[in-house]
Figure (tube, rainbow, N blue to C red):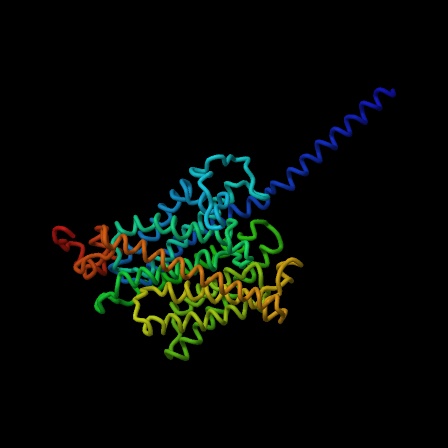
Length: 448
């Protein structure tokens, strides 16, 4: 009987020990977190087709296929680049606080059992890949009707490698901006300032379109469809950036929605006052501006801060889109600079104003407008340093890449191609056969 009791006790101890190992394992790999981040990755990936619709509906009817193709190829090319070296450069072991090393080239050493916090590393890298994809796609709206498709296919991997991957590493991968504690919850600097600065550099190099090639949007309902997909996908963008299925992710969802709704309404009001009529494209652009501006702040600010950021985005991005192009003379076809560059900057700045320990926890920071102290003033300064460095780096390196392409294979399409439209001349397709039936039989001169 004693032996039986001893064996029973020993078995119980072994079962408890085994259970503790399982519980410890559950603490590391959380299936709920994994499911949410995989879903978030899918939501963010859906944003790229949404972006294609958003941009495609706003561009000229003779360039809609080209616009859809540019965004779609961003998905294809970056997905490949990310596997080969993009992920390693962004999230590999830090090299001089500037970029990751090449230890994970080809995803070497990463197995289905390799973890990144509470989720598999494959889930993390898939989620981050979608951010790289959408960032490159955002640039495309600025160059509508002018950029050679062959040059674009070379530009995409060069830009991702030389600009996106380093800036991503600075902010999220262990680089110097992360060490300085510059706040960017979901990509105000990494995604939006990066793409806005790149767009500005490209349109300066490409030059303006001819007046006869500046045409009204070809499909306004498509713009709203794209906006809806972007708004929907943005919840994965921001709430997913918590990298956990918890209360802060839910909080980021509400914050994101609040800012987008506010900016959509405020942009419409600004347009109504300024141009005497509210437009659907204006309201849609305002929603996107609000989503852009709240992105860096979505895990750091409270609900009223989100409303304030939505107001700032609605007013600031509206007048930036209306006035900056006229003031400085650049031709940003679909207002990438005004919405994403300026919106991302507003968001990065406002994060330093409205971030709060109520959301961030006791180790967080009360922003300048929350705590009214030196802590908030310091954080605001760090935010300004972060976006100024990112603007300067992305703009200058994009200029170098653009000049390289311009003086090698050429950056801008021939004049006759632009006049005819890039759908026919670059792809041999047209988007609307009934509207453009006469162009379907157009003979393209040799060499074009």
